[in-house]
Image (cartoon, rainbow, N blue to C red; front, side):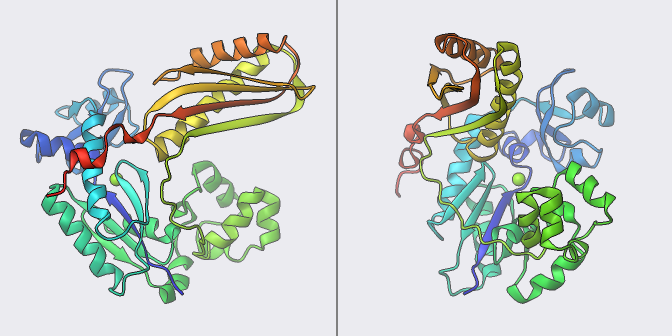
Length: 349
Ligand SMILES: [Mg+2]
């Protein structure tokens, strides 16, 4: 049985919310982000993109491209509120919802007898009418393809791919479109003459695995448009963590700190991509020693910093009598998501 997955993606979400709340910004180049030399754009509206402004661009550079660009600071509480409103529209269609961030989600609509394009059009129409922002949609038999498709007719558009169109669609698709293929991997693929998924399909699973490890095995499926991952309904996740086991036990504090900071970045990355509608409650640092003893330290904070990680690490290491370390872990414990409940914001009519 073929599935029907829809990926919904709000168009320049943060900027769209700012235009919604400040009609005077509409039609003008607008970006959300930090101003000044150190600030970076989070989102740019389409007017600003015409000048070459884009997300992750430093504010001063954006001003060089577009001197009359309006840059406003982000208001996450407000974006969260709108995001919940959009999610309550999704819930009219399915309870199989996997939010990826405040402005993106996968919906599993396999149980519907209606065709996916009609459903997606209806969801987008309800968002436009009730929330007054636009969304784009991709409709496909799996998450991988649905996400690629939602980008196809952006902004305010949609694109569907049916099971029997998949093979043809994949042939000319650039490998860079596959989620998980970053710039670095794209370059190393290009070096061996692979630019499209069709070209990748000619490489054996063995060669892909040899070059890219476990990920290579996945690429073998992905370049064929195969993806069996289910839509994962967000259960109330309690924590996110990352750990590293050292090849050789580490016996100096100075050698532990860089790894701790890298792990913090990795945890933060997952948090921002998957759980940005949640709040961090505390930071945890965990150590396992060469003799298999272990210890962990937790500190309440909403904003884990490298300095805090370092200080918890020191505390844990000293508590373990500075023994050689075999494994280091860093994690965030998340606050209860029910802090703002949906029923409070959107009481039943
Ligand atoms: Mg978006």
